[in-house]
Image 1 (cartoon, rainbow, N blue to C red):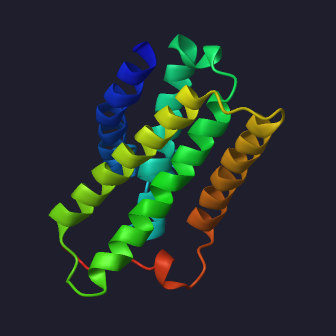
Image 2: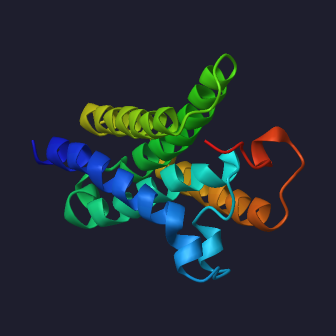
Image 3: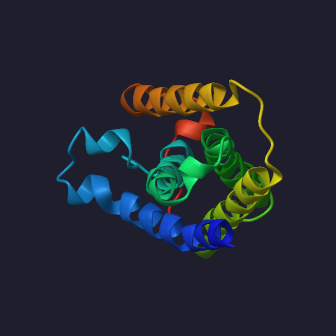
Length: 168
């Protein structure tokens, strides 16, 4: 029950962290260190940082209180963090393929992605699914994703994912 509580309450905290991160770069007076974890423009890629780092920050806190008792915690959190980003991108491009972008739909997508990711994390943790070395793969995935976010923040490709979105 304690784990379920932490995963569900995490939805609210992750959403809150995401909202804070949305404004953190500007609030920090455009600090380049903050740019590593907060969106620096209105591209979808930069907004994926809100889901990814929101989940990672919450996972660090959660680990202290309950996570250390689960052998597969790092893997579950890595997978759910990546899943949240994937869902945001797929759902955003899905609805904008037939509708104009709407801020309220973007917010709903963000929250739905977090809810689904947290529920998947809960399912993995409760399943006791564990393969030796899986947490190292999760840690590597988190590190490589953070590296990609950092790299593409300062030198973004020209792909649509990295272009500024139209105003809502």
